[in-house]
Length: 177
Image 1 (spheres, rainbow, N blue to C red):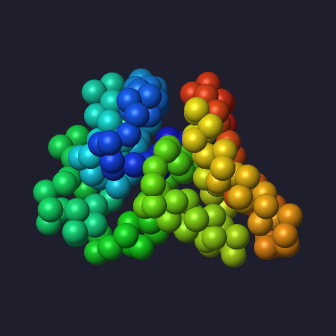
Image 2: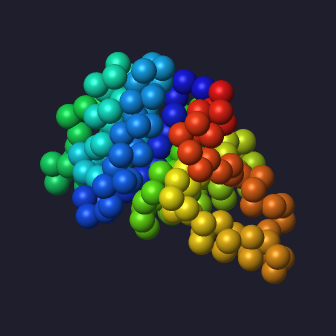
Image 3: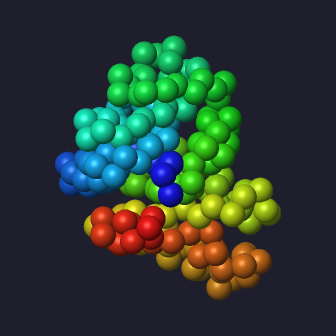
């Protein structure tokens, strides 16, 4: 697993502990010469993980929608930019280019990306799973909601068919291996 797609927040207004987690993940990716495939932004956890990957020797690929580029929000840490028209195209390219996908803490955009990947897997477009990086219990409520949907019959297969959970960096490394 050399190409790791990461979905995460572009917000600057979040607790520093999430930046520290993103930094540690990026450093590990760089140290092990992984390729980061991400949304290409110079904001929030996106910029944090990209900077860490790049400074530690990894490769950074940004999948950049035109609106992001027009507003000058593209990271300087990217080795390669894949330009796309919109967010839907970005999700498809990131999914296709990545060996696996990780959801760090994020907001609406991250949830959209996670559900896009899971829904596409559920109907057979690919066999990739999302790894929820659940340090500090960030995704606990969402995971409970997914279990509730299953219990009420709104899933043909258990949703866990489409995801794994890593609560620590060591667990994430183990899943990726």
